Image (cartoon, rainbow, N blue to C red):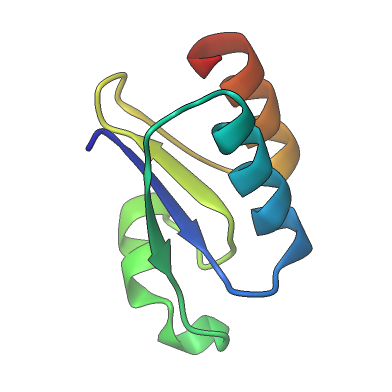
Length: 79
C-alpha cells in the first residue's frame, strides 16, 4: 500500500484526515501511534518530528504533517 497514515486514537485532527481519505475512496494503511510523544520513534523516523497526523505517500515521494496540509493534499492530489 502506498499511502500510510500515522495517527493517534481519539485525535480529532487524525479523524478529519481519516474521514477525508475515506470520502475520497483512497486505500491506505493506518499505523496507530503511542500517546506519549517520547514513544513516537517511528513517526520521528519517517517525518522528522513526533506530531500526528502524518501522511506518507510512497508512490509520489511525499511525507507531510499538519492536518490542514494533509486535507488539502488529499483533495487536490488523491481525490
